[in-house]
Length: 175
Image (tube, rainbow, N blue to C red; front, side, top):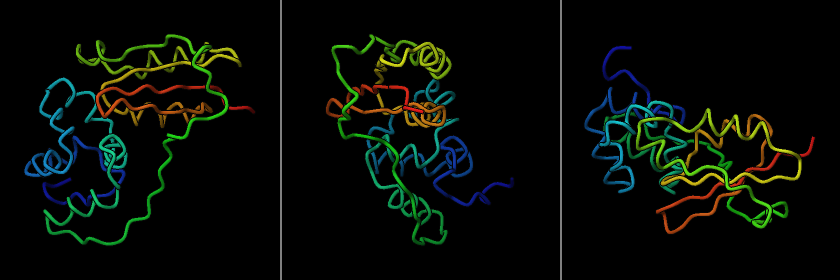
């Protein structure tokens, strides 16, 4: 794709966006200060490569349509209405009982080494029995990983500690 011909949409990957429109990196950071992590070359190579703008909006706790339209406005693209549904559960479900939650994984160390936790988490989830709950901790909302687990039939619940740490609980959905 030629430079500056990328149409910005909810499915656009963050890395693709900032490689095509480098000036939008600062716009992302000013819109959501948590995006300053994009400057970390390890996170840029791993997380930004697979994270869509819709997922980034969830990570930043902003409306996808607002983020997309802000980015489009900066590059002179049409700022039309965008229909997006949020699929991230922040309502405590009945299946969550933290007494039976397995320790799971703290993804911070993996991310610091430049590794993405998705393979480890999915392997762990596949080993869960019907009554077990898995807990993933991360320094940001792992939206791509949640989407992957959801596509495999896992329910989730997100707890946020003032935007500094996230706990995502996974449970196998009833078939």
